[in-house]
Length: 197
Figure 1 (tube, one colour):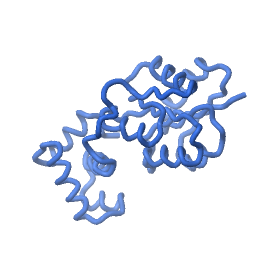
Figure 2: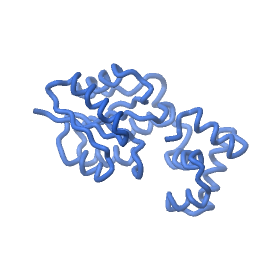
Figure 3: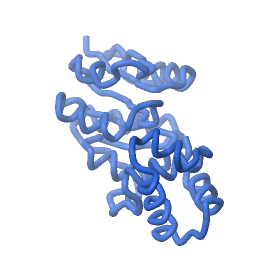
Figure 4: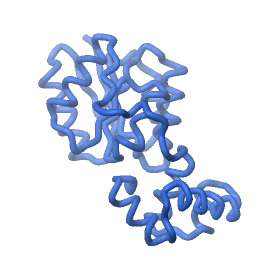
């Protein structure tokens, strides 16, 4: 029997998705994981039929997980199912090697269909112009997310292991690229575009 993996740090979501996919794909045993410890080893350590991955796992960069998983197991289709907005994250996830990207506000049928396409070797991608060049870099998204969580420049620098001046540079870039004047505008933008986990 083939096996599949659902990785999400929220128990209700994880079990709900596992049950949905187990029902939709009865010939595949669907396992659930919190992703708290050794997520990359877990994804790479088994020949999964598919992996459904939340890229917003605490302490992990989801895009890096996809890249590393594709390097160690390029034949495993990864379907990203995340709270983050499709317009900012989908293009990055697809470029990193994901077969599809769906935000958690999509219907259960959309997720089942994305997994079906991934199992058929097709890239489900996502609707719209997700493959257009993203407005923000991965690091800019990280900095924006941390500012939106209320972290200070110093706290962000420590969390990302970068200099405080570099954080200020990212903040200035974000304000320039997004046409925003201050930190309050950055908070509002992050919230309106689903960039706060």
